[in-house]
Image 1 (cartoon, rainbow, N blue to C red):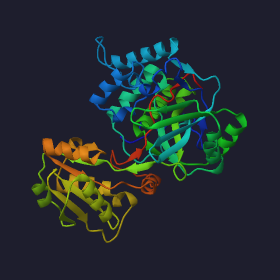
Image 2: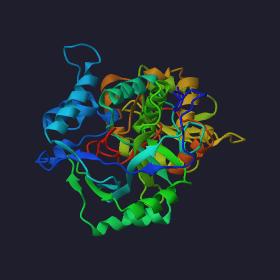
Image 3: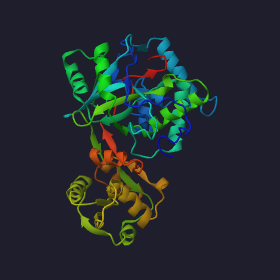
Image 4: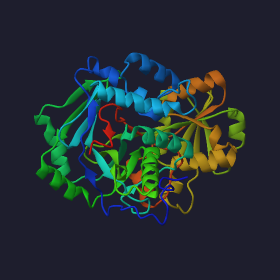
Length: 425
């Protein structure tokens, strides 16, 4: 299943002809609820493991994790979605969450150390998969889409934004940079040390000028392929039920100028179970070579980065021995997708040489953590270099899809900065 497969080909949904980022009235934590603001935020749902979920639930009873990863209750399976809806209603009725009075586009900044990403939060008018306005670059899986769709239907809300990058223009650039002279609505130092600041732009003339500049633009999904597929699925279901145009035609979105305020792109490494290093080396195809290198992970990653400047390369390790794997470049390079390290890793190594089914592979962007896992539990880690933003954009422009978990855009927006409910527009 790929992003957009949920939209029927004969759909009469009124897709826009350009990029539309509309203002909305954000639902935000009130000052009364923010006695410990850092304890209210959490990472996106798909990077929270079980231990972190437990910790977040106990950190603050109003932490956003209670909305995005609710627990089932004794009433039965899938009761977690009803629980999320009840929690959202309760937090609104008791003043934990309050809706802004004026609709606006929000400027949202994430800072981690010396790295700062700043962009626009609004509601994106959804476009069809073939319109070329919003470009996906990864495949989606039906399970996460079904989960997020059930949560959306129960809460009638977008609890987390999708994350788009694009080549920005001067109006957006000046607007995003110009908020420094004003007081932010939110200024939170999260538990992980990352700083989050939020400003609202509500001036109608500024919003009209911004809308005109954005309309001809095209944007790439940096993060949130499953959430975007969920947006489209929910929209199709509402129109299929005869409800016509409505808030389901838009989805909460964070839009970042990749050149001026853009994120970093990190690699996501592959953990391969039940394969020994000697067996993996013996089964390499003739297009690959293997050379011993020194660990630990930090040293091996530096060797990998150096090797990657001249071609496709990987580091393969069981936590004790380390091998640099190089690929002989093809005589006639094909599409951008075919040349990506992550594509070669899946098609040529995991599927071709080692015959490892994709559903047995696990993923981790922290190399040292992945190496520790195989050192303790067996198997191998395949370390990769990161794919550049330009390469990701080229794949999307070609209409291709990278393997899942191909890129990690950092930093990621925190969940809990804003929520968007269907009565907020």
